Image 1 (cartoon, rainbow, N blue to C red):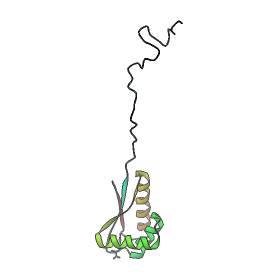
Image 2: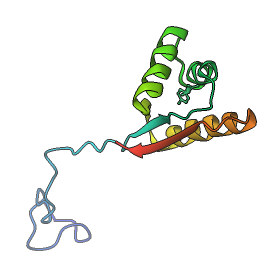
Image 3: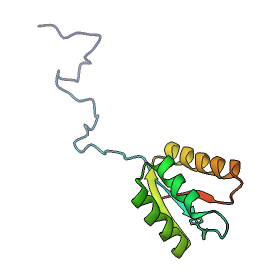
Image 4: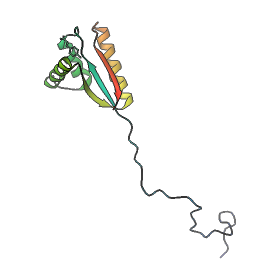
Length: 112
Ligand code: TYC
């Protein structure tokens, strides 16, 4: 049998790995997650915050009311954890909705 002169050099055998270290452990890279935070203020009506949580964060009325009260009492709370793009969209939607209704409600995001 004659070795293929194009693919195999004189010193190589057919199963030579050419020095490439084959990966044994696959490193699964998870995308970073971002917390969306709602901040308390003295002016935004409680019902408006409850509506925001229902509308943009898919919570039912009881969950929304409870989380609104947590923000009201503690000053802020995480209302969800999302990919960068989704978190950014939620923050923009809440801020735009609050501004359109002339409420000072603040919503921010931070890396988890
Ligand atoms: N503190 C507000 C009030 O007493 C209610 C409120 C709750 C405002 C949560 C903002 O993120 C907020 N009307």
